[in-house]
Length: 254
Image 1 (tube, rainbow, N blue to C red):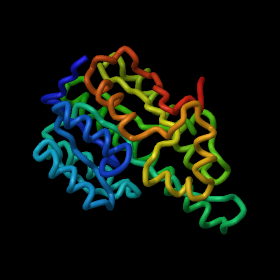
Image 2 (cartoon, one colour; image 1 turned 30 degrees about the vertical axis):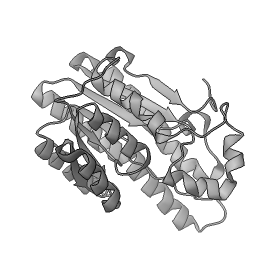
Image 3 (cartoon, helix red, strand yellow; image 1 turned 60 degrees about the vertical axis):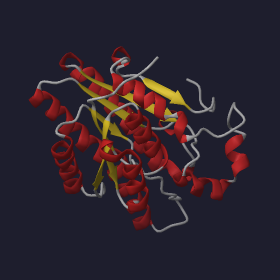
């Protein structure tokens, strides 16, 4: 099946590295114009833009700020001249033990995790829905959640699991509430992915701990996630609205 996204305008948060970068590459290769949001990785973002030229527009913003998140959406609409699809991918995973750190640090970790992983996605989704309504256009949302939303995570990463569970509920609510307006919503739920963000977990628990949890013999790569985002952005899977697609090497099956 050939997928042509020519003419599509897509905003991807956290698009400079890892899963986000793979999704940006996949969308741009399929012909879409992509608004690549990033926080700090200037060199990685610029490298992707140089690879795809005018197909990738750079948008820097701090998603820990609600105001900056709102401004990001408005800037994306301005530079892309509209948005057809929103990919809520940006996220952080902060190791935050219950007993080994002061309570104020633990609370700060939770607040930052929820703000970036869940609240920023909610703010952008609200703005996107309003944009689609104002333009009387169809819209597609893709949430990059995690298997942790369903099976939980370790005690150190409960904030991460909670935020990803919230993303699933948000996506399903949007799918149910706005389907009649041709706004659809999906969840991609990766398992453990070989990314820079995952390296902290590997360093803490060891690669063997991760791999023995899988049904397959190797870690999932970011490029294993990207084709699903391309498919969902194409409109060829709209009747799967509300669904979750598990991509976790058989480590969690439900």
